[in-house]
Image (cartoon, rainbow, N blue to C red):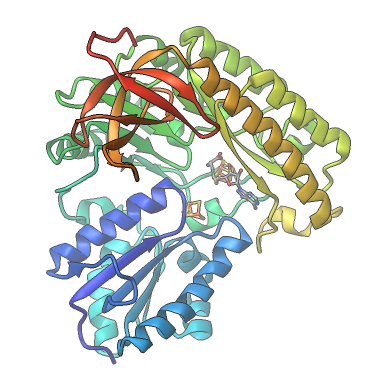
Length: 440
Ligand code: SAH
Ligand code: SF4
Ligand code: F3S
């Protein structure tokens, strides 16, 4: 039994959709009269919004639960612990058994969190991992205060079943939110202070509603007064429709950035991964995107050490990286996930081989990121200021190409300022304020 909590803390561990969910859980608890606290050890209710994508992400949940109990205990507290997110979905009752948490709630059921917390306060079982047909979004409170760059989930789930991935099991089948509900939420975000909206989905470019595709949604957002920038992530190569590519040519607010994971440069491995696109198909797709928007910054995801990956396969990944020249990218060691086909495939790769390949891949990706940043020196662009830096008077924002831009000056968070890029680093660039109108 716990007394009903008065304060709460939400900790999100996963992808951007997981962060969006965490924000909305926070709004939901605040609407119940609870107060948010930044101190995880002082909260009456700690919501761990978990990620199941790799083994390490999952392990982190259990170590965190132990640490919260210990540190809160030192302060005389005994917080209610709720496990939400993709580990909750995948492990369900097992979490209650293993870690004796109070609430377990899956990513499609968190609108029921207030009820589950009330049940747990009464000492009752509180687990909900249902995937209702009726989506949760209609049950969530209105958006009130949001950062200048806000997330908006438009599509959830995945039907692709890549052989290494848990997402189709933790998030369920592909479902799109209705067009009108998304446009309403986008307007509410802008009213609450958003200047940039990133449309989110596990396969965001698979979004559809009654014949409308993602580019129609982007065109509708383009018409919202007060919204300056539109982005979307994550896209799957097979859902990159002509209309979406064309939107990069003609939609003024759509930023020149595309995150398009490829995972491997070897056709043999892509097939074993069930990616259903080839190396060549991916490269040709990027050619078309670059034709529509020549300055587009490209990003990707890679997995090294997928079962059966030979040195020759890996060399194809490196050569694909060379061919594309990514502005930034994420790379991971393959992590076998329970219940996925790849976990039981023959020829699992030894950890030291994976480490060595990851290092080589990251060296290539870092080289290209540094080159992209160096090539932007001399460019002039708008920067959306997102936060203050550590130095006196320092501001940090994003360029259209999603680079972190550091600058000194007198402006407010949420302002769009004209900047000349004057210096490049590995992970960020330095900018100087300019007053004349920008061309970008
Ligand atoms: N829907 C997106 C991304 C999903 S997860 C897509 O298809 O691209 C984000 C990234 O995590 C994936 O792109 C992949 O690179 C990585 N990932 C997924 N499962 C993994 C696993 N079992 N081991 C290592 N990395 C994995
Ligand atoms: Fe996972 Fe593949 Fe779906 Fe992406 S497309 S979420 S990697 S199954
Ligand atoms: Fe992780 Fe779930 Fe996102 S597994 S990457 S939080 S969809």
